[in-house]
Image 1 (tube, rainbow, N blue to C red):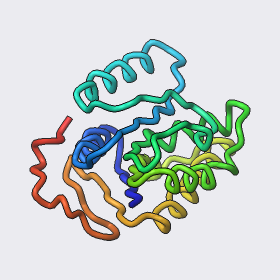
Image 2: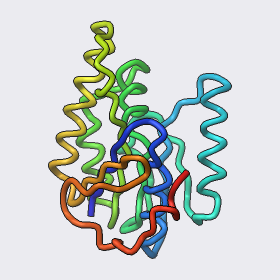
Image 3: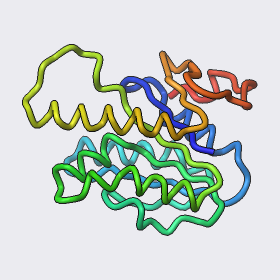
Image 4: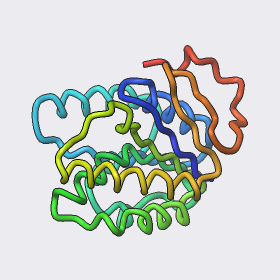
Amino acid sequence: MIMLITGGSGCGKSSFAEQMLSLYPGERCYIATMQVADAESEKRVQRHRAQRSHLNMITLECPRNIGSCQIPKDGTVLLEDLPNLLANEMFGGGHPEHILSDIQKLANRSRHLFIVTNDVFSDGITYSEETMLYMKTLSRLDADIAEMADVAVELVYSIPIVLKGTLKEQTICRKEFVR
């Protein structure tokens, strides 16, 4: 099963994804794509580590080339997050054209794959050509992954809105995953 989880900044995507991950038995793996570049990103990484410390999972720091991650066979994997991965691949000497096939590799090796992305398209601002290319590429990736996903969910004010498929975990109370 592949689940794509999207929403705006600070809407509870990470907490929701981690809650979903915790519902599935077996080995769990968290693929962290954030490349620590400054004190602010270090704080975010520390917050996310503390937030998921109780989930009993392997954490793999992998800012690029996620297809090479050694994930547990038939485990449950959380990829956090697609926008960071794309930025690392596009602007850090990677290969953004391999992201979709790398995600397919992860999906083929895992039983459940949760992918967190971000809605960066709602502000209506025109950015530089380079940033607009990044946003267009992210939009295409999001659409392609949503097409391959079994379930797509948007978090709005920490409320999951199912865009595709169904959540069998309908009993989850919103308060359980609010940041």
